[in-house]
Length: 159
Image (cartoon, rainbow, N blue to C red; front, top):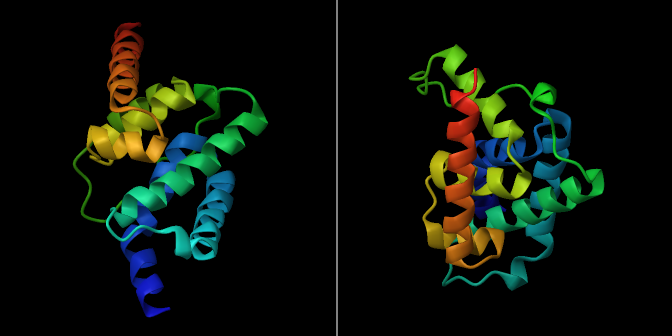
């Protein structure tokens, strides 16, 4: 239990932010966050210790998020944006207005594109780790990232 508590403490903030950015709904993100840890506890026998723990954890969360978005069967419009993700206290580098604009742009992306942007750009996972989390080839991650960044640039340039 002590090891679980340490893993929870180490990953809770970034995992919750990841889920919140994908779902764009704070209450739903909290439910999926808790479900992720329940699934983690139920499937500890399937963890491969040669792989990175965070990749496995994020893959569980990603799958639960995608299941939830499929149930909703719609993309979440930017005007239904959740509150900005929780931040570490020392993370005050971005101006509030810029941050809110970025969240609105991110929310407008389709979930499969939003996922790779969040993992690669915001959580700094490698393309290989992102591919493992999402369950697609590395080439698909590259393609999705390219299309997502192209869409974000286009949306940001529109007045």
